[in-house]
Length: 191
Image (cartoon, rainbow, N blue to C red; front, side, top):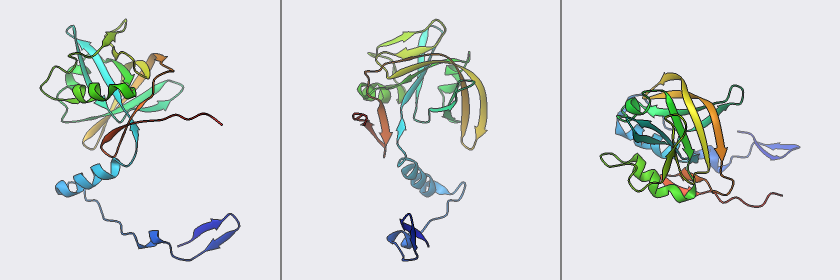
């Protein structure tokens, strides 16, 4: 194993990382692999977004830690939705969605919108756009989107969303999900 010590010198001295063992992951292999992968994936910090819309006059929503910018031109973002979601078929019915990039003040709201068998929007301040898109108040950013494409990917669908309009709240600190916990990203001064 070669490790860089300095830009101009290489060494073959073993490092503590050389002693690591990698366990194989077997598709469809028991709860063990699912638990290991959940813990492993949790080591990657992600933002938290609420994906919401009005359906029959009521807000419907899910929380996504898989929200990702995809393209600048055309403006596209994506989310991943689990096949077992019972909310997604209703939420995606007319194809128009609001994405609220959640702020540090939204931890409780995130848990509530992600909960099952409860009024997900009770006591949560939200507003609707000109379309059926629904947004949470005081978020770090808002995107009004339309579903472009949905691609099956294992036990999820990767949903590409065309961005129609946006707004940013420069004063909000974003909510981050890491190691199965909510955290706040502290933004330091630029150097």
